[in-house]
Image (cartoon, one colour):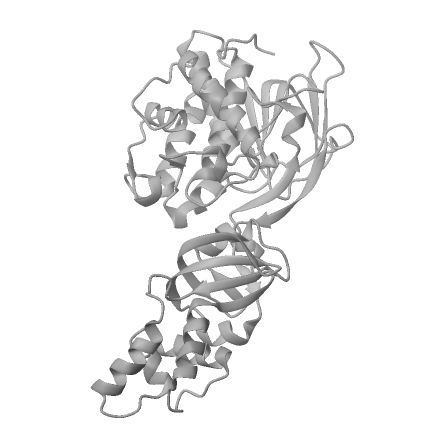
Amino acid sequence: MYDIAIIGGGASGLACAVAALECAAATARPIPRIVILEATDKIGRPILRSGNGRCNFSNAHISPDAYNDPETVADALASLEQGAVRAGIVCEAPNPVVGFFEGLGLIWRQESEGRLYPLANKASVVLDVLRSPLLRFGVDVRCGAKVAKVVPSAGKGCHHTIHLEGGELVRAHDVVIAAGGISGAFGLDARLPYAQPRPVLGPLATDGRFTRPLDNIRVRCAVHLMRDGAAIAEERGEVQFRKYGVSGIAVFNLSRLAQAADVLRIDLIHDAAPGIMADRLALLGRSLAKDPSNFELLQGMVLPLVADQVLKSAGLEGAHQATEQSAVLLEERLHGFDLRVKGIGDAELCQVSRGGFDPCSFDLSCMQSKEHPGLYVIGEALDVDGACGGFNLHWAFATGLLAAWRIVGVDGAPSC
């Protein structure tokens, strides 16, 4: 019998457990008896793989507009700011999540676009500062514990019951579902709307004719997501070509919007002045003392292998003499190296999943179910996802804190 049972030992679940312990200790409340039920063999996996092993745990410029459901996020983040003061998180940090980690001893630094990383540049130190309170307060961490079903309490004062695969039962006063992705609804979807998760924020599969020969080549570019001939989104940054399509942060962000049959329009010369190819044709014609070829027109602008595929997409032979007409066509292709989207390229590389429980079913000040008091859903288990840059981990940690503060009773409302 536990005070709190947390299903999922990822970012949101660990933050919830630690915040509940720290707040209870700081306010002289009874230390809650907590069990963490993790289906895999190790807690903290999402943290360890974040930011290429460096853990981009938050961002200095958190904005609701970075998420697929801005209104939900805005409400939750407003509650986070208010609750942080009551929870004793008062600091000069960019946001309460960073303040929470500062209180655990984490030293951090800021990189481009507001991305926040641990100073040690290793994701393991973020997991270390979260794991330390679990050990200090004797939290029961059970790896390999796969949850089959959650049965909400029958009424006030009753415990929730968690059915594990194999038949074991776990009972707790409060249950926090922190298992996102492919976890499923644990039998709760009859009264809590639930959308089956699908991977997003990952590489995209495209027509491989042009990308297969460019496997692992990286370019700096602008990328427009085109639908029915109109651009619906744009990203700038590095794109990595793969045999199956394209990867890179710019592509990851666009994958949250992309649909099959959309077009990725890669602009390889987005900073170039209009008419650059005609100018190059004239310049090379003078400097080389001969008529330049189509390939020589591209030489020095893009990598040779990229030049080959640009020529191929334009239907031009690289060895043929460049003309005013071919220069115009090549400029069009450099600004619009089009790839038709098929779908997600590699689901295992996706950083989050879209889907899960509908946030409308929960009190966004604490992530508690409106239908089932004492039942909370946090992090990726809610149908909220954000762009690259620390936004998804920030959401996971933020919702974990909100749930913990309500359960312990330091957010201004009575504990449940």
